[in-house]
Image (cartoon, rainbow, N blue to C red; front, side, top):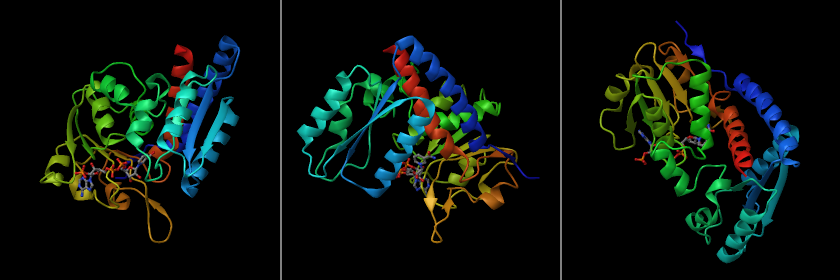
Length: 282
Ligand code: NDP
């Protein structure tokens, strides 16, 4: 039997409508629109495309968008000065630092310069620490989107066994923290995990953020389990594929996110959610 599709596009549309209404109400309350700034250093084409996409998204939901485009030869102190200025700018509620930065710049230093209350990407160590303590914070957008997909599709998490494949600071680790907060019993797997299949076969929820196409096969999945695929890999023919061998796993799982159209579309909606929270607290 084929698994239920956890449709990220449909959810993203619903979340966009909700965000638009919340932003309109907030604009009245604050007497200004919420503001998002994006710091981009250099002209990496993928970054430029993403910044353009964010600009369009902001325009469509009523958010003021301020791109800060710095030259590829910007020094660390100029970068920190630009971030500090945005931290203090009263009509800017959220600041994103577009990664990767050019090699001569220190990404950790740039992130530390950010006011954690404006860290709508959830990358500042203060937010990671608050999340680890189960306290309210800016949650990284990708795992927040995965949780929203689970929640809106009423997938039971309490008391369930879950695994997260991947331990990056931006996807795997925060996803594991969020599942623990939702009362799941969580195992974090990584490239040194022995018997990945054995661990995953015990689990009711499997979330994958490894960046390895086809890593998760049908034999690794317990029949009826829910599978969340964060993987975004470009295959040789240019198409987008996840980390899960979708065609086979869909026949075993109870519910699954497609790639594309699963976790991806929900991610930017979670950015809006963080921005709304930051503007509300301002
Ligand atoms: P990283 O490369 O930072 O982390 C990958 C993780 O996967 C590491 O922890 C690594 O283990 C683990 N891993 C790699 N190979 C294996 C393996 N064979 N078995 C078990 N674990 C393995 O990637 P990110 O977390 O940044 O991204 C992961 C994926 O999610 C990528 O495909 C990325 O494109 C996608 N992504 C999707 C987003 C979305 O909105 N859907 C947003 C952000 C990312 P170890 O730590 O031991 O090296």
